Length: 39
Image (cartoon, rainbow, N blue to C red; front, side, top):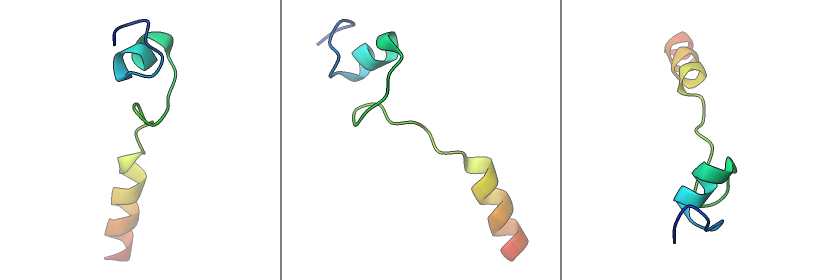
């Protein structure tokens, strides 16, 4: 349950990997501009 744990969020951050516990952030800027253009 620390930096060496590949299944924990902290371990993923240290490892530089993504998964269920540490998901990639979706780009918000595109969604906002599309919503403004439609509205």
